Length: 268
Image (cartoon, rainbow, N blue to C red; front, side, top):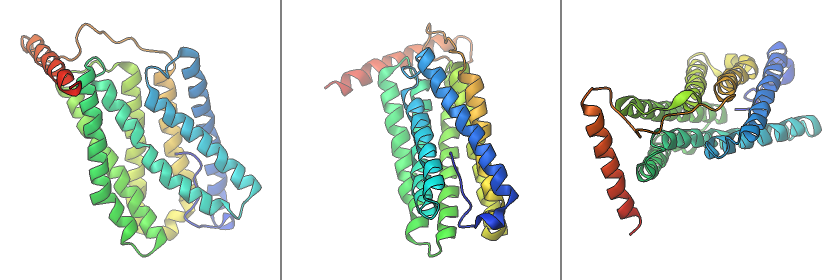
């Protein structure tokens, strides 16, 4: 997320797309800054520490890319791609935050969910994402494959987290649901963009890269800003519940007992 350039395309070639992309990127950057300020005002950093840490990283990273672009245009491409790859990995922090929020009332299960999310991310990263960088010859193709596979991995983890939340009827509230919706929208658009780039070639992709990627980020930031503008209260009477009548109390009881047993094991 943040400032995005065009796969080595020169400014003269991207022309209007580059201008539109920069304007869109400024809007997304401004929304993230506004969201951070609002989070400080409402003390949402305490509720969503990983998510807001990611926002601060994205804001500072994007600002540094703007400064590099203005002060050192020749060094910008190399600095940008390093930041871009780090950002793709940093986005997994959002997934860990979502995982934490699903079982926020059950600390032990929450720790287990975080560990599993990190383990799945690392496993897919080594087996599915990393080979695109190690074994691909062309840089542009390697970057496209890396971004596409990272986005697919995030989509898989999002689907798993959504299924878990839906299965147990976890009361996420508007804030967490907004985080999931915005990030799902961004990941879905990234998959579509990168798939089209591979299908139609990097030449065509370079001409639209400046505008499309910042647009995906802007839409995501817009959803986040709307959903996190006010803190949403979530009922704490039940940590989780399944939609199933008499099974609700039994399920909540079993999960609470599992949380207690897991807590004892973690403290040994």
